[in-house]
Length: 252
Length: 246
Image 1 (tube, one colour):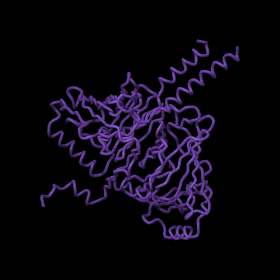
Image 2: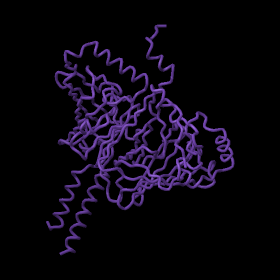
Image 3: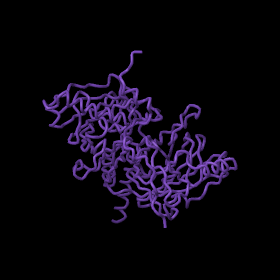
Image 4: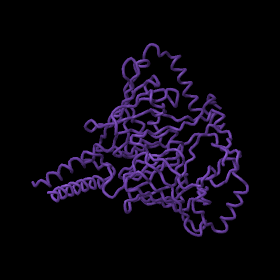
């Protein structure tokens, strides 16, 4: 056995003792804690998505969302697309401490775990985890799928990025003036910076009944500290104060 | 010489890449009877069947009287009433399959019920010192492999959060320590987990019981979660009032 072969065999043995789920060459190592950073946001606390490219809606949806915007949030809950006035109160939670879910990360850290068959994304605050199936399965027939806040996702690795497609989302607002339904197709592309510490998440919503062109925006997250713990955002539904409205800070 | 070293490194990396790619190309689900499986890969969806529990009676301290247990049960009832996160260990008894995902840095256990995910860290050997840790319903868990057994120790489970009564008797407190041992069986189609609780204030001797999970079908898909609405009056009345024979 030549020296290179010996070293190669050693490396082979070393890898064999590592986790079977360890990402292979060309697969980005996304596992770990991530924190959203909004360095190109709106410049205020009004609406983090204000600086994103605004959705280009079809006339029926433009009219519908305008009507809803004028009517205000149905429950008084925080509306990500509304520009709040100084001192204007909004409800932080609906009071049930339920699973708000959601696609885009919010201010809480989120954690990604990759294995061969699935990529899982969980938040530190209540919300549905995202299960991204990597085993080649197709999407289900939407007639037999109960929509959820995170839908049904299937993914693959492409040019060093995680690319996944989601359908089956519950109807609701999308950042930067968009909207979604179960038929809306969302494609996300997660790309790592060369040093592995910065994650760019590109979201593209496509739905001909809603958008005149695909609605795309990006959110960036930074990798958490080494050995960063996952906190638990504990919500006490028995505490009457947790569902009270609060006034956002004065904005200069 | 430098060229030779570079060539050596390239050869090593190629071999490493091949090895990893091979490991990734292994079949995801357990093999058919008689075929091989990776005894150190517990990733998958796991169901707890009706015959999946082996629970001896706990050996409780004399101070753990029926009145103490009743008081603890009342706390648990309040947690259930307000839909608090279930926490450990009852989250592991989910009526839905639990999702275990094993990466190089951590093992994640996720649930389709009112429970927060468990993060079992592989990159440190010791649990957090409790003075430096914000207690949670699932605690701080670290894991390592002993042969083909995945050993997990957990501390820092908040004694005031979630469901605290333990299978076999007794309850957990903030000072309890849990050791779990995970081992694949039946050609990778079963996952046996032993749970050992140590808490001298509650147990005379460590309390050990075991669950035997079975692997869910290959293309199992996560369902709409079993949520819990604390403001649903009908739901609250259901379990706060004694059942009527009418």
